Length: 361
Image 1: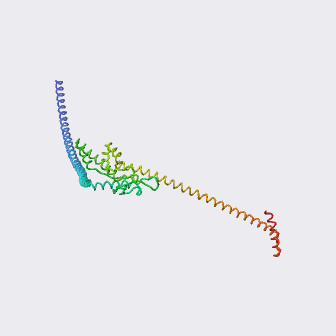
Image 2: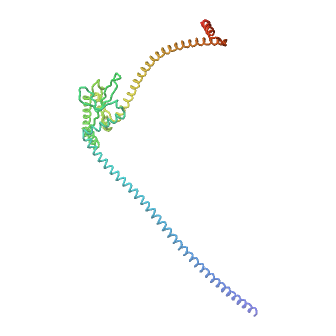
Image 3: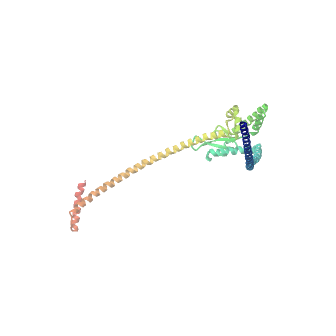
């Protein structure tokens, strides 16, 4: 019975202990839940505060970025618009210059359409080239090179003749058959074969007429060279004429005319300039030889005068030597003289002179 009571008591104690433990655990659970709730609230508040702070900073960053992007965009757009504006101004300026150029081309076309004005332009260009490469005494303007003709060539170059003071004229005339050439260029652009052949023949005919004109009006041997120069003021025109080799050969053979463009004419003037310099050197050399001959003659005369002068100097030297001997003789006599009367002194001086002359001889 006691055992049963003890067991029951133990069970009761155990149950009480369990109840106490459960209460304790319940209290701890509640305390832990409270703390967790507090921690949760604290974390939630912290997260809300952090989120709010981050949102504010992100907003500030967005505003700053927007401002910078806006400023950069406005700056870039402003620079781009400025560049575009400058380019447009340049384009407008270029268009204005092109309009002026077009107007100038139109004026130039009008000038070229006038035969007289076109001739003046070619003549001015030819004159500028001659002025740059030759001296004024090496060429002349408006020269009557043919005695039996009243025609005056635009320019004529002076070439040395057989004698030093003589010269012959090299006639140079500017020709500008632009109508046939322009028509030929237009037909080549349009690829019109028939017109190309037709205008090429017209250009050939114009060049032959110009060469014949130069031959008949300006070439007159021996007053001039046996050939003349036809100056074409445009390189493209000269190239087109040069393509027709048979034309150049016929003009050179039949009319004694050499066709030249601006570049080839400059090369021709350079070669003539070298010839002028060679002739000038030869002329100066002959003058130098002449001067040397005169100097040689004068030097011979100077030698004769110098020889005569040497003889005179030799005579003076001999006379001075004789006078020196007489002076030494007088000094020897004077050493023995202390004080003598005037008459005795004269006798002593006069007497030894004969002895001295005898010694000198």
